[in-house]
Amino acid sequence: MSKKKALRHNKNKPPSSYILHYPKVIEVIARILEAGEVKYKRLNWKIGGNTDESYLDAAIRHMSKFVNGDPFDEEYGTHHLGHAIWNLMTLFELNGHEIMDSVKFNKALKDLAKKKNV
Image (cartoon, rainbow, N blue to C red):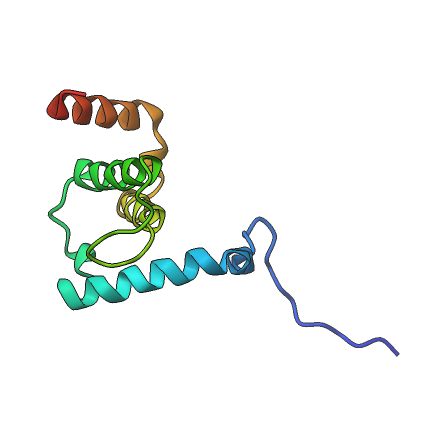
């Protein structure tokens, strides 16, 4: 006698459990969110008002610090790559798949470079 199984319609749905293979990333992002909650307010980024460029600028700034030998953010004590990930993750969350448009992304990078005279 075979047991019946409940129906599951998971076809074409990404397994969320994949994220669990990145415990260090999850921890640093959680710490950054926790520190941000103290400094700003819980989920302050959802209020909006910041430009895409501000998140991109912050991500690049944190990556640059890491590349130049400074692994940890002075203010938070967390890894600069974690901050870069948070900024890119937030940029993506706010824009959805629209940010994947390479034309828009490249324009944002070029505009940022012009502002910074890079």
